[in-house]
Length: 398
Image 1: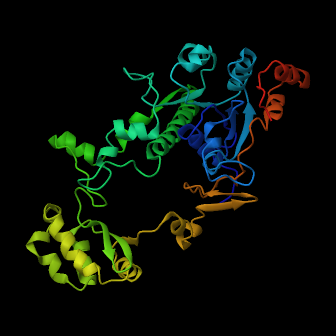
Image 2: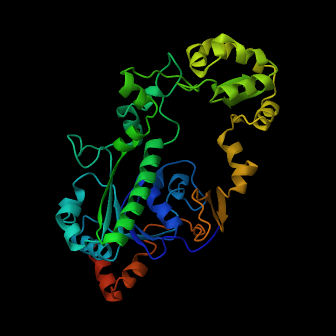
């Protein structure tokens, strides 16, 4: 639903680069916040991440996480540019940054040391690799590094094979969603008490929060979780199986569902086999279960079987590639692929029945709105000219 957005009237300054920060800011923008992306003269590095690149030269990666934002170019190594930034912060409700820890302090714009006192209602979201506290606070971190450090990579992959990086930047994406949620919580506190606060989000905390049920298993037993491939560590059957024409995922999470699976497959005796009677039995005898089901499923067409299982109330799906998923009738019905003018992207996953979300506006070029935004902030044409001549916008300002 296209609408005005629940966050209309909220002003956000996005100082972040790469993924987690820009994605969190885009989610705020999708729901109506006025987001200004501050970009250096050389640009967010994801502008160069490709191929693929779009006809206008922009990278698909950058396009996917920077829509619905105005763009101001500031060279923050320049003292006058930092003065402009402070002015823009003074007019903002939310600031998002993911600079190396301590960078804002070196510019005289640290939250704890300066901004919290100057702007007590400000919500300041800091996204970092390892957090604002602890012995690793100043160290850099990227998604895959945190997948390795946080244990996530160790549980992803096939048994007896090397650990694998999860195929999407899942740590960054989860951190973005946690930043989004934290900002909304902090804005609620501003409404309740008038007090702004720091929203401290880290990739480390995000990856640790992702480890359930493996973390719960280790905390309860001390057992190091093993890689199980597509299978679930504590539920069976809950995995991919080969059919006559491709893989099919079957998820039977209780005894009733397993009995239904056995019935649909035409082998009801599977559910009464003592090896498979209870979920704990099926997990303990997983190899035998996989062998028994594998022989039967190899005779089935995957789409036909998926339809039969779903009709019986059993969650199941063919293994779709990304293209097939994005073209499915259900994805399109949910408006999870959006097109507006020349822009095509992923839709807004949070549907609000009253306020809706904004129609997508393509990401802007570096500095595309510098003069407009500064003019709205009270700068005269002469002042903007002098800032430009003094290098506040850098040589690459477009």
